[in-house]
Amino acid sequence: YFLEMSAIEISYTNGYSELSIKAGDSTNPKYVSKTNFTLIAMDLVFSIAEREDTFQPYVKLGGGYLKKEVFQQIDDLDTDLISEEEGIVPSGGVGFRLLISKTLAFKVGVDSWTSPLHKSPVVVDYAGTAGVSWMF
Image 1 (spheres, rainbow, N blue to C red):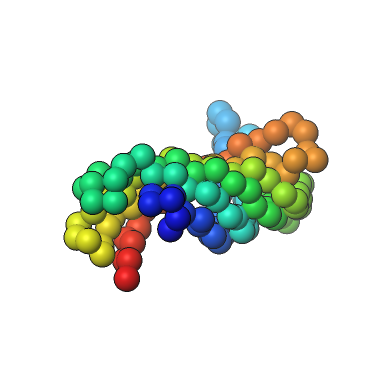
Image 2 (tube, helix red, strand yellow; image 1 turned 135 degrees about the vertical axis):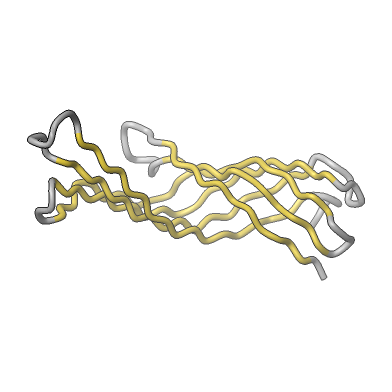
């Protein structure tokens, strides 16, 4: 922590998503899109409250390094790599901490980041977060 209620946050996010699409009747193929991603980020977190407040909303801005792979599978055939991107991305988020005691807090937020800066079009990804903070 510095400047009373600001902090630098270093985070690691590893995720997977799967989207399945099948249109109409049983003769149409089923498309499955699978995405793997890893993000290592550093953000500056600004709290919009005092240290003793029970409800502490925050905003964070920063950047990170993203590696993302997108695969596609049609019906039950082989899975093919259709997109791969890697590079520096802007990141940020909003959320709040709910103090349970002076050293224990519940934290909820939404983090977001874009596709690497050199890629076009820009794609924004996001993740919901929830957790417990223990300060000592």
